[in-house]
Each structure stands twice: as structure tokens, then as C-alpha cells.
Image (cartoon, rainbow, N blue to C red):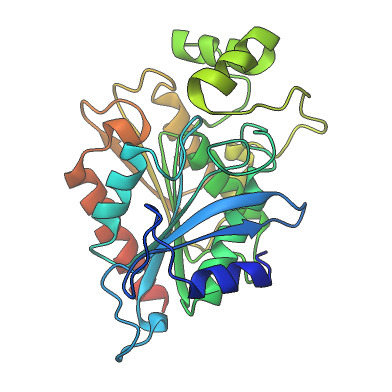
Length: 284
């Protein structure tokens, strides 16, 4: 949930580059229910606030980045530029990433970060909210949709390049990632090489896995997107997610696509935005 300071920062119209303008994106820190500060940016997209229609008439995309990303990374800003053609966009840095507080729990308590961002989007007047997540963020949007059915919930879900199950080590990139997360030397590399502060404690308890979360998402519209050349998670992961949805999810296996934001070309992001906007219109 966001607190009063978020509203005050929003009214100051602070752009990501630090300048101010009446039409600029809004930048603020949100606070999660466990007290973690989350660096967040709201891009109005095509919405014009001093005329009709109101923000309630426009969709908002809440983007959940992948592990070691943050709100200022060029690949995250590129996603924003494409989605902003179809609605407003909220981006944020997960805990332990960029300027946000706390330490990364690699997909566990990050659900609280996403809930704060969705709550902020609704507090700005949007009644149609979609979550779009990549890699770690893809697993977070699935778990968030399963666990939040309140004002911090979502009306459509897009999960891109997400794992289906925890502790997967079947590819070289995932073995390297496990070293980064579980070893003291790896966490130092994460902090100084990737601007990502990783929590040293193991999960206790182990959180609900993405494949366990998927059946709980219905009837919220769900799109699972995955590249057939993903070097982190092979195509059995998206197929497991789609199967767990029991016909509720739509699955796009993208030929030649690699992993997450870097591999999601603008035409694919455009298709995702169009699919999401259509589902939100149907639900609204």
C-alpha cells in the first residue's frame, strides 16, 4: 500500500531525470506493508488530466522487471515507451534493486512491492489495471494475481519468460544465478556489479510457486509469453503454466525469442499491449 508521502510526491510532478514539468511523469517512493521503500514512476501515456476523459477511462500497465533490473534501466524504459502508446504505465524497482530499499528475496516478498504499485495506480484514478512481468517479475505477477483479490489486485496478467517452478538449475545461466544468490561472493557481485542487494537468508517458508499460483488466477485474463530460444527456462516451463491454467490462459511461444525484456522486440510488446487493452475493455 502507498502512504500519504506518495501522494505529495506525485503532485510535485518529478520526472525521472529530476526536472519538473506540468506534463511530466510522476516519481515517488511507495511503502509496502512491510515498510520497504519502492522507487516508482508513473507515465501518463496518452491520458490528459485537465480534460475529459478521466484516468478511469484509460488502462494502466504496471510493469514488473526482471532480476537485476530497475526502473531506470534502458530495457525497462523501452518497454514503457511501447506500452505508453496504449495507456498509462507504472514502473518501479523491486526491493534491493536500484534506489529501492531492502534486499531482494528473488520473487518472494516482491509480491508486496507489486501490490504497492498496483494500489498506487488505482489511487491515481485508474479502474482498469494490468500487470506485465518479465522473468522474476513474470513469476511475481502470477503470484500477486493469485494472492491479491482486493484493491491491490489486477484485472489482467501478462507473464513473460517466467519460471514455472522454484530451484531450477537445468541451464548454465540459472546455475550462475543460483551462485549469485546463494554464495557470499555472488551476493557481492550482485551488489557492486548489478546494483542488486540480495538477502542472505533462505526462503522460510518456501513461497507459493508460479505453477501453483496459476490455477488461482481465474477468471482474471492471463497471457503467458515465452521464447523458444530462452536460455534460462526451456519451453516446458510455459507449457506447465498453461497446463496448470486448465484452458484459462493464452500461451504464446515466440519463435527465435530469447529471455525477458532484452529479447522482447517492440512488435511483440505492441501485441502484448493490444491483447491487454482488449482484455481490459472486455472486463470493464
